[in-house]
Image (tube, rainbow, N blue to C red; front, side, top):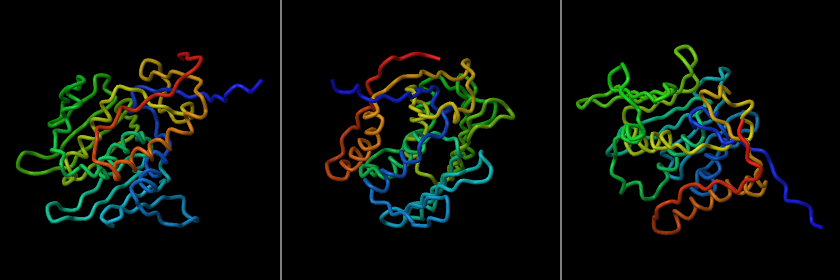
Length: 261
């Protein structure tokens, strides 16, 4: 009788902005293998450097001594119609949110996307105006988005996740000239109610308070967990080989013995 398929225990976490950082490979591997970004080779340094094929964009992942520092930075050179811009992300920013930005940046159809209001996805799920100008706060008050610009003058954007006034979890910062559709990609991912998968949530979660975070533990076939990144790479490689099509929503793998904690 053949052995039973191997399973691994994973957790599905919601809200996603409090799920912890996740696996950096979700961002770096598709950029390298599907989008042609080149990586540096410095085995003596615990960092990752990836540059776009046209050398205009540089993504750096560099762990800092402070666990709440801006570990991820994305710099883009000036273009004829736009000054240089940057984005940075704290260590515990979920990789799914950062990937939304890099996915939109490398989308061949990006030039046909009409810039949209980054606030719109959040307003649609009930985020409300915050006390400060040009800000929105999530219904549970654990996430906050603020724009420091005006109709006359562009300004930087800040997205902050926190468990209280003195308990920041992560912050994302976008320079004043960051393309609007990249900001909207980030806020759309932030607004997505679907939980995200984590293998090490016991260590990475900023809080395990069941009043704040929902954690559903599930046994999943190991082959599906191992194949998720490979499927993502193939999906994004296909964007460059075929005419753009609407991406299907991410699928959750078949599960066994689901239970909540």
